Length: 153
Image: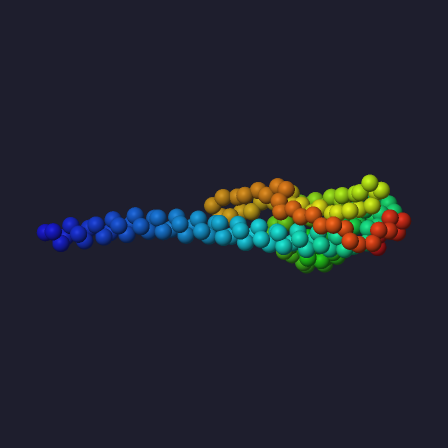
């Protein structure tokens, strides 16, 4: 009689422990996936800012400024300043409009640094979504040539 009661407890223990294990595994997956996507964004933003910091700063017209910033945003999103139509973003769902490029100027109007930031990017981590606004962000000193009279190609 005692043997039958012990066998019934094993089924109950399995049900309880399986629930705890599934919850732990789902949480681990969600954290790992979110961390993986964030790491991809950090790499993309760093590469784009490094590209911007080494570029020649041209700005004869507003169109030149927009062309330069578009090339920097494309570098962050696609890994290429002039992406082809079939290229996909380095991180799923990232769009050039979500990348903010801000130039920091010193007292005489020359660029001293460039700041690249991701705005309103949503990570869909299966059980929950996380919105990253203002991060990742990186600032590099501008080490490129300063040629404000030249037109952007």
